[in-house]
Image: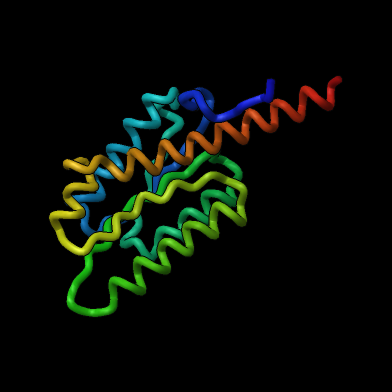
Amino acid sequence: MPNVFGEDTPNASGMRVAIVASIFNDQFTKRLCNGAVTTAREHGVADEAIDVYWVPGAFEIPLMAGELAASGVYDAIACVGAVVRGETPHFDFVAGEAARGIMEVGRESGVPVGFGVITADTLEQAEARSGGSVGNTGSEAMYAALHVAALLRDVTTTEDEEDEA
């Protein structure tokens, strides 16, 4: 029988997490942040182990997340923001660079980083994804980050046990 990891709900007790949230479009991002906090709590993260960092906009999220990941303090980071398409190409630049930057932080640091930046064509779509009819993207980002952090903890534990044998 193979060893299988990650099928269970992640146990994040003892973990320290950060949330990087965009102030811009705060009618959505406050709800995304609350969703991320609630999910962290539901998976065993203590309130005093949850830190929230507010940055001006989605474009600034990757820099802050990168610094937090490099600090070595956090087991997981959830990034939340909302970019809503307007009449100019600004949306494409901000949304694309935020996504690329957040992905690079996780890949380069080895710290799980959840992507919870809504990229919506309309305010109604952003509303639906920030706790409305489609769910809460902030909650989903935290869940993803905690899930991978728990898997990484399992890998480290398995390696430690093999080293002791």
